Length: 214
Ligand code: AP5
Image (cartoon, rainbow, N blue to C red; front, top):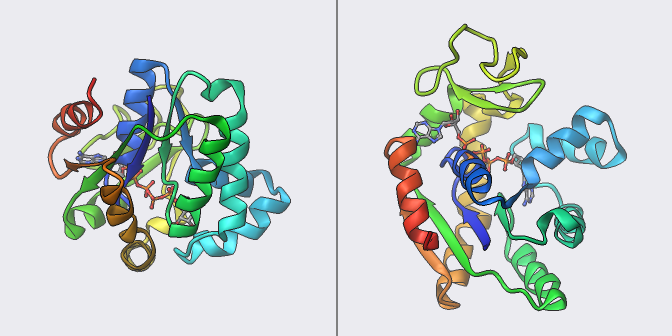
């Protein structure tokens, strides 16, 4: 399977990508996770990306295109992958087409997560992530057994800097201006399937599986 998960911040792309990747042995390529790791490691790329991410803006195309090109060329993605959070601009989508034509392995399906703005704000403002293993929780919808402690590894939970309400609103605006046009881009190519993403995690997972045909 070669898939793209497209949708606004907080639509549940990462939650569903992680579950589908685990079940079907796919590689999850999250540009957001890769960039956050680069920021945490203090690499030159991380230093460049940080100011954009903290402001809710997109990191320049050439940076993320390079990340995705390297990941897709690696052995871990040879058995199939989910692009989670990429592409986000028309320039990135065109670059992806070029990369995949080099591999003769086009995208098979684009799942477009459709969810109301208020639900997204509620989800993101309650999101908590484990500092050690990156497992994701929600203060209300998916709490840990012990407050502030990861169920999987005992690590400390934290709230992302860009999950403050003002930055969330900016990310939603950036999505509408830059990424929403990709719905038409992929619909015209016959690749887009909409996923109703406002329900429970289990119901959205069922809808994702139906959308990608597994
Ligand atoms: P990124 O990390 O990709 O953020 P995003 O797209 O804004 O997506 P999120 O991770 O916020 O949300 P999600 O849809 O994955 O939802 P999740 O499953 O986590 O990007 C961050 C930044 O990096 C960008 O702003 C940009 O600066 C930069 N960047 C990344 N990619 C880039 C690119 N291609 N080009 C340029 N810049 C790039 O769920 C959210 C919460 O909701 C969780 O707490 C979860 O537990 C909960 N939840 C999930 N599903 C449900 C449900 N069904 N019901 C209730 N709660 C739910």
